[in-house]
Image (cartoon, rainbow, N blue to C red; front, side, top):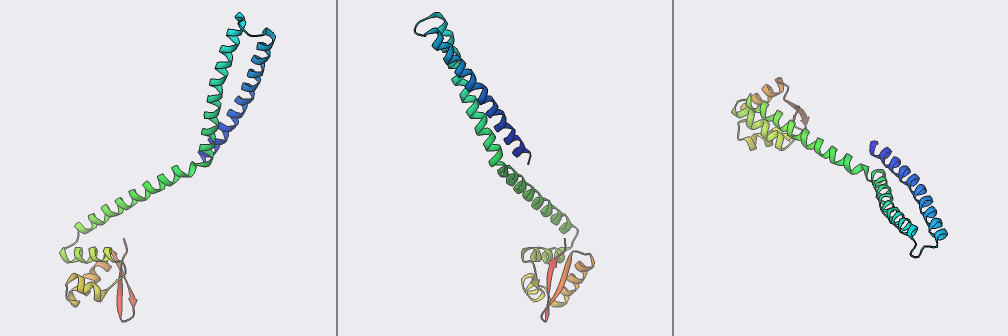
Length: 165
């Protein structure tokens, strides 16, 4: 929103500047006609001032283009910041997950990593992927659920496992 306001302000300033610039060029042209500029001494000054006005036109064009840029393309910056914020949040979550894993034993860590890879994995599939007995897996899942790290939801005859963190 800030860049939109800046864009509008830049356009207004450049338009006001253009009005003064056109007035100045008309004044210089009238002065040149009054002097009958060919090789008169005053004509050099008029030509120098007209050259300066052409430079001012370049500045006017730049200000106008910059104003439109801020007005139209302000969302690009916002999207870049959102993407950077998302990447930062993912890294923070990944670090948080790694810290939690350090507090778990070998089997619990293995189960947590598999559940993270495949969110909503069934207990039967988890048993096969972790290569753990059904009784041992049930105990590990109860312990992780007690620690508030996972949630188990009923799915048919088995349960789905989801990370809670």
